[in-house]
Length: 286
Image (cartoon, rainbow, N blue to C red; front, side, top):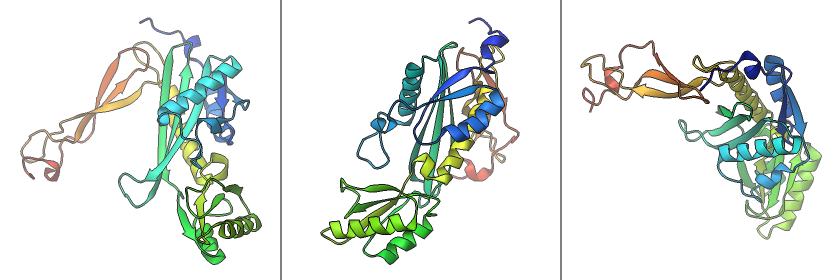
């Protein structure tokens, strides 16, 4: 595969389609427009809620990466641009500290001129939570713990399966009205209250999106030494770091694999650590 000319990999002045209706253009422009010199064009002629909602009334289309790719492609089609970017978030328990709520943000950058996709992620703690309440005082306590009113809330009658809800709640009067409505509408006289995880409604999530944009920017500024394509970055690891006591290979990583998203070029970068601790050795510590 031929090496690319600088003009083909320079994003300065290039227009990039960004489909979003939840305010993500602000952090993405702050990072990418400034660092790459590109021009993110906000595309709003499509309701992205049709691809899935955090209120669960519409299931997400595909997995996180597939949903982001669909968004980017729709934005590119609507704008007629060959460059596109999209963001998709997911929420759940922290994979390492299971009891803590966790947010994974994914960004995809599609460049049809070079026939490449560059994906970057960032993760961190979040206020993702919910609670069933039976009175205003309990609702108020939950709201305070969730960072309200800076972080918006959603309220349903009864439980999380109720089809009616009020979202975008961002002040105490609207929250109280919604809780009273939910309690009165529920046969059990209870309300299901949860955090609103749309980007504009959740400053903590918006910060994670900003971190993902930083990671994407770094990837786009890293070029393949073989063909010059942007996006040359870590893609995996080589395990087998020898044990400090017996010298047998362990499951610890001894090198990182950096790969090109356009050609098949790979580079192995050895890690600084020469030996694994004996505690991680299956031979010394079976």
